[in-house]
Amino acid sequence: MNFGDFKTVVKIKSVAIVLGIFLLIGIIHGIIADSFNVFVSWLLIGIWLIYSFKVLKNIKQYREFNSPHNTAFFSIGPVFVGIFYSIWGNFTGLLGENLLEGSNLYLSWWSILFGFPYLAYGSYSLYRCFKKYNVIYFGTKAINARTIGYILALVVIFYIIFYWIIFYAVIDFYDSIIIPVHFYVDLNLLLLLISTILIFIVSGLFGTQRRLPTLTRDYITRRTNRLNHLTSPQRTSSPRRQNVSTSRTTRSSRITPISQRRSTQTRTKTTSRTVSRKTTAKPTIIPQRSISSRDFSKYKPKAGLLSVEDFKCIFCFKLPKLPEDNGRGIILCPKCRYPAHADEFKDWMQSSNLCSRCNAIIPSSYRRNPKIISVKNYSIIYRNFLKKNK
Ligand SMILES: [Zn+2]
Ligand SMILES: [Zn+2]
Image 1 (cartoon, rainbow, N blue to C red):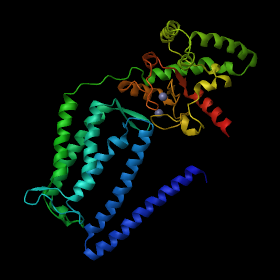
Image 2: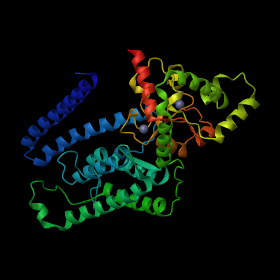
Image 3: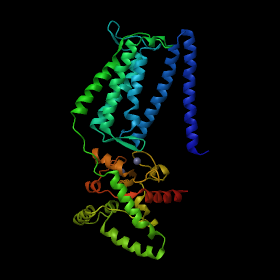
Image 4: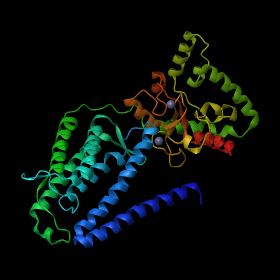
């Protein structure tokens, strides 16, 4: 059993323990109070704690990598958790006392504690779909953030209205084993409905459209394909490699990589400026042949002891590899040399000019013309480093 398996087992075990504890409390309290609602409420608290723990853990991990929260997990999950726990306010046997007694509205400690935080976060996520992000990631699949925003807003609006129709108009509902405790209008849901409609209209319909990244995945596909096609046959023969390595030297003196440029700061500013202009003239491509072990240090992330974690994309935390990343390229931060999928890097550059990992300013020439490494080459590079470590 390796460490990864071990971690999974621990995770499953702790989830089972938490659920078991709340199940037990629920059964005992449910029997004492003679209420099925009390039993379910305890169980829901257990599930809420597990979910919240997972959210906090993800936030911590994303903070560590300084990554934007534009994933389905952060954009879509919270609002529905918030809605569900707000709805349960009509059923809960715990903390359910109405704090707005005397009005038709309902607010209890249950809805404040378990519903409101996720509804607030969900509304903020919706706002970010329209205003901040270009895309939302579903796993590795990127979907236009505005599209997600429209769908999410409409689903939330219809969901709340649909729920109210069911709750107040459909009689059959009351034959179910879970019986509502009261029929007040939930303040949480009312606020969410209003804020969702406002965000939908103000940011969604009348807000400014964001520019889309210029470096498309198609473009990267074409480039990496061409690259692999051009270079793979030359790898095997050694006399040629000699030849190639000299041509590489001339090449690298012509097109100085940024990392190298930084280290040779004794040069005058004017030369380095001309060099950088030359660099931007043509996209810098690293062909297969140019990777000899001597060169590997140029791609080494700046970390004391390298582990496989250091070669994972700083945005999606996945190790670049084939065939999963077919057609994608890798871009390294010129400063910390941590890798990112090229499409994700480009997307991030739309909203920031800082490296998401080390906060260094990415030069605008590099942003326009980042050096793209094929996933094939990058996996050769990191395998080499990881082998050395053993
Ligand atoms: Zn990635
Ligand atoms: Zn960096």
